Image (cartoon, rainbow, N blue to C red; front, side, top):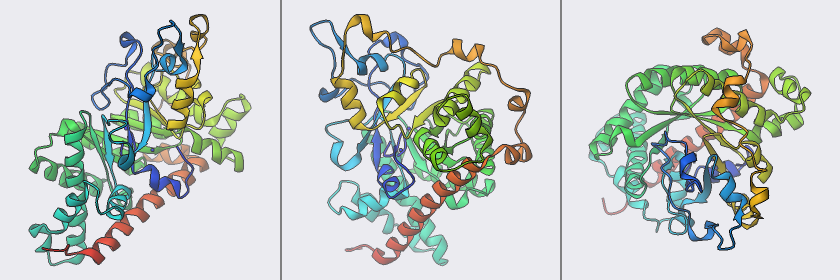
Length: 397
């Protein structure tokens, strides 16, 4: 989902990505409760904040009313500024969020970091790398525990991207984090663990989901990633629509991207469509999240997908666009179990994915964007460690 969720995530792979990881994503209540997608353990519907209330006594409705009939709309809202204005229902804790907290000493979450740095168990570790890893784990979980008290939905915790090519290390890290969460009475059903969608990450998701541990796969830019994650049983699969579109504007040579362009389709929207139809046609439990949304038309083209993460400026525009009753149904649901049932897949797309078929199908767009995303996350993790080395031990400890 959320401080980044649903997300921590609607910008290019630039410096704005770190801000994105400090965001809360909050689902808006559907205008038609009967059409709410039910399996929303992590994103329970809530009543919209006053600024997004869109029922009008005139009998007219807004575009926001219409789109929330089909998909859970998850606004991006900065954690420090909008907690009261946009009460969060789900959240993500990440290295980037820790950096943001440490840059604002007066935030309510700063004590979670200071408490982690004062932990006697971590303090007693002789190896400096082990000690620093312990501090970071404690900080993530302390913040996640605070967020769990504030949100009714799930808290997603980022797994260190530097482990993305080591299945065993990912599983071990998640077990370590989960043990810490249990120590502060946050149950597993309140948690997601956010993992990059490398093959090793997807395999870790399969192992963790088999234990009942919920995973959130991120940096999905190709059909093989989405399909393999669905086969692994990932709880949430996140596709960055705008980032794939940006790549296509400046690069060539990716068969999947170029096939979409030849059909006159946007590559990012086409990937969401194919992934949604695959998940629903073949009965996978995964929920699909569309992120990096750039405009209202993106929202309209994605109606029916499980979650749409949208910038506040787009939601405000939707809220301000009044739609007469005879026009609001021109906003049609593009994705549904019915569209999924009629979607045709090739034999090559219906394989049981393994490491070799996955590597062969992973095109240059996914390779480059996945690598860039993980580099960004890894850089944030390193910055946290460098910061902790400077401020440890905290004052008055």
